[in-house]
Each structure stands twice: as structure tokens, then as C-alpha cells.
Amino acid sequence: MSGRIGMPSPWLLLGPMLVVVLAAVGYPVVTTIWLAFTDTRLMAGPGSAHWIGLENFAYVFTDADFLAAAGRTVYFTLVSVSAEALLGIAVALLLNQEFHGRTFCRALLVLPWALPTIVNALMWRLVYQPDFGVLNAVLSQTGLIGSYRSWLGVESSAMNAVILADVWKNYPLVALIVLAALQSAPAELYGAATLDGANAWHRFRVVTWPIIAPPLLVALVLRSIEALKVFDIFYVMTHGGPASATKTMSFFVYEESFRFMRVGSGASYALIVVLICMVFVGVYVRLLKRQEAS
Amino acid sequence: MVRRPFATVLVYLGVALFLVTTLAPILWLGVMSVSLPADLTDKPLSLIPKHIDLSHYARLFTFNANSLGEAFLMALRNSLLSSVGATVIALAVSVPAGWAFSRYRDGRVATVLYVILATYMTPAVALILPLYFLLSALGLLNNVLGLVIVYCSMLTPFTAWFIKAAFDAVPRELESAAAIDGASVFQTLRRVTLPYARAGVATAALFAILLAWDDFFYALLFTSNQNAKTLTVTIADFAAGRATDFGLVSAAGLLTALPPVLIAFVLQKSLVAGLTTGSVKG
Figure 1 (cartoon, chains in turn brown, blue):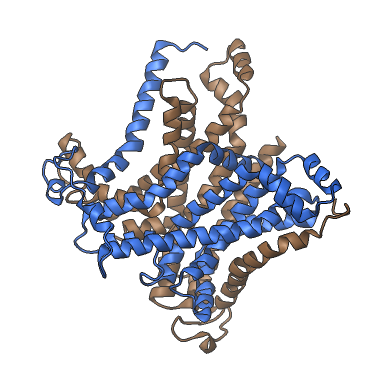
Figure 2 (figure 1 turned 90 degrees about the vertical axis):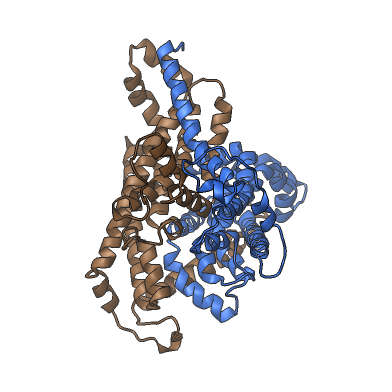
């Protein structure tokens, strides 16, 4: 096509975008890789850094605190993304039924998703508030709990309380994508399956699932990447506490670099985060390819 | 298909559950924003406000020096400038790039598209340190322009992808006709392709504003006072104090949520279409 008369080189058209992306992503990535092999500190200035080889990485893999943070992040990702998948499918199937007010309900689905992450985090922090929060009030006034609880203040419930807030905001994205796929499904398929005597579960497995699986998988890849990078919601809701119970990998890198000012070692932790993301994405891509092949 | 009565009851129960769980937290945020502090600490708590008090909103819209209102309004300005500014630049580079992605059947062009998309997968923590040094060297820390530059990196992959999808739907015959009439590529792009694809480009623009408006991490680290702090960082500050004023935080949160929520409602259909084209083809 580029041989057509009057068509400029594609690189002329791509050039401006490449400059922006290379400056804002390419350059930082390369620099972070370099920093990871140095002992750079935040206030000391770039000139004072020394090349220390793999020393930072040797420390990463023996750092129990970081491994614990990685474990928490993977727990957060697996639990919230699976909950988002299940709820997303369930609500999409529900909103695909015919009932009064369906259009309104579908419009409502974008509300949590459009709410800024920080507003969502603040909202749930107020809901969970130990002394005056509405959750304690509702649960105790209906007799479900005897006394007020500090949902975000104790190690046993803090992580799951944040997960609930995250799922509430993010499952609608999965539901929207699944719903759009459902609407593209030809009605005759369902009619034919019903005539063949298939029950609801059979119809779901044979007709619905193949239609929603590919877009669902892509939605889950997007959600997993977001979940592995998670920082904002924890910063506002728990600040990593109580006693590190909700400190995630991104939070760990943030503290290492900007609180303890160990930029070199912060960069090596950051690269580990990238690696973990790549492993997750790799698994999904493999699943997607297998699905397309079958 | 005719549903049995039992199934109909189940559907409406499900819908009721969906409505309550979706609306309750937001409605409560609204209740808090117009309640007197004393009413919120009542036991047992009343879920319907006894008095309506709009003073929190009034405090946010006052422009006295060193007031919360000033902090809020400056942050509103910074959020608007940084998200709209970044969106303008992202669109300016994405329109020609999106056209190239859509029109050139060249393996290397396709590779660039995937590399651009892969940048989305790079966690901000991996970029933040060099960007910090870079902005500091350029004197752009605590500066809205610095945020604009950083946000471009977040927005460009999305806008390029959306605009490519929008351009894919433009009939080639229209462009060929313009070319035969002697229009250059850039004239064709401006007079034929862009007007035809304007709905898709507008969706990309509003989606980009949503993304930039939502940012917290970059703004937290790259801004330090009212010169550049955005809304998300400012309301997190409001909530960080020891004696948090629930009503004020709720009012500020609702106002921060208003623009993206309105955009999402208006765009609902095309947003879903954009998301699914991306996901089905991705």
C-alpha cells in the first residue's frame, strides 16, 4: 500500500507519537534498568551513583518484607479479579434479561466505573469508618454484629475490605464488556439449543460461553495488570497498614524510593514488579491463543 | 422465550440487589455531604438526613487566601488544565499515527502498534524515578506542564488504538475520491477522514480526559502545592488530617466525581463499543 502515489512514508505519520512515547516511556524504562544496578540515592544527585552490579537484586530475593508484599499483591489480584469475573458475568447475564427499567440499570453500570479511584477509596473509607461509619451502623442496627468493628484497622479484615471496595468499582467494566458480547449473540442459536432440549446450564456452556470468553479474557488481562500495579486505593484507604497488612509491591517501591530514598534498590524492586506483570500477561496470552485455536 | 413466574421473581430480586449495592454507597456519600456533623455521629444513625446543610459546598466554592476553598478551586483548575492539555497533545500525535496504523499494511507498522500497547502494561513505579529526575532537571516539578508531559505517556496508547479503530470504519473509496481530486494526504485526512470518524475521535478524547482525571500516583509525587496539585491529591489531603470533616470530604469527592460520571453517562454507548472493539480485536 505504501507504494500508492501520494502516500507519505508511515514513519512521517508515526514520528510525533513515537517521540512522545519514547520520551515518556522508553527513556524512563531504560533509565530504571540502569538505576537498578546502581546505589543511587534520591537527594545525593545522579553524579554520586556507583555501579554495583547485581547487589540490589541479590537483596530483592532475600527480602522477606518484599516477598510478603509480592504475596499480598498476588492475593489481591487473584481474589479481586476472580470476584470481578464472576460478578461481571452474573450481572451481565442478569441485565441481558428482559425486565422493566433495563435501560436504566445498564446506564447505572457505568457509574462505579467512572468514579475516580481516589473518590471510590475515600467513599469506602468513610463507609468503613470505625466509630461513625455507615457499615457499622447498618450492621449493628439490624443485629448482624454486636459491636462496632474497625474494618480497615485490623490485620484480619483490612485486605478483604479493600478488595470489596475495588471489586465494587471495577466489576462493572467486566460486566459491560460481557454484556456487549451477549448482545451480539444471534438469538437463533438459543432457540435452536432450546429446541434440542438443552437446559439453562447447557445453553450457557455451549452457546453463551464461546461468545463471551474471548472478550472476557481480554477484560481480565486489563484488570489483572491494573491489580498488580495497585497503589492508589491502598494509599487512601489504609496507607499500607495496619502493620504492613496491606502493603503492596507498588507501595513498597514507593517507600523504598521516596521515603527511604534508596532509588537504586527501588528501581530493582520496580523491575521485579514488571517481571511479575509479564508472567501474568504471558499466561493469559497463552490461554487466549489456545482458545482461538480450538 | 416465555419466562416462568419463578424465574421472573428471581430476575427482579437480582435487579433489586444490583440497584441497592450500586446506589447505596454513592447515595450515602451524598447524604454525608449535606449532613450536619452532629447528625452523622448520632447513635443510632439515621440514614435519612434530618437537616439539609449545604455549607460544605459553600466552603469549597469560596476563594479566600489559604482557605480550603482556594485549595479546592486551584486543584480543580490544575486537574482541568493537565487532563485537557494532555488530551490535546495525545490527539495531535494519535490522529496521524492512528491513520498510519489503519492504512498501512506493513509488518513494522503493526509491530509499532503492539509496542505502543505494551507500554500500557508498564507499571508507573518503573517509570516514576527517571521521570522525577527528568522533570526536576527541566524545572517542571510541581508544574502543570510537567504533568501534561507525563500524562501524554498514559493517554497516547489508548487514543492511538481508539482512533485506529475509528479510522478502520471510514470507507477507503471516500479517501480515494479525494485523492483523485488532487487532495494531499493531509488534506484528505482533515476534510474527509476526520469528519467521517469524528464520533470515534471524540470518544477517544473523552476517554483520555477520564484517564488523566483519575491519576493520583504521578500527581502525588510530582506536585507539592497549589501550583500544580490536582483534585485527586487535594481531596486525599483533605481526608488525611486527624480530625477529618466527613461532610467536606464527601462534598469534595462528589464534585471530583461529577465530570467523569457525566462524561461516562453521555458516552455510555460509544464507550462500550470502543472497549469491545478494542477487546475483541486485541
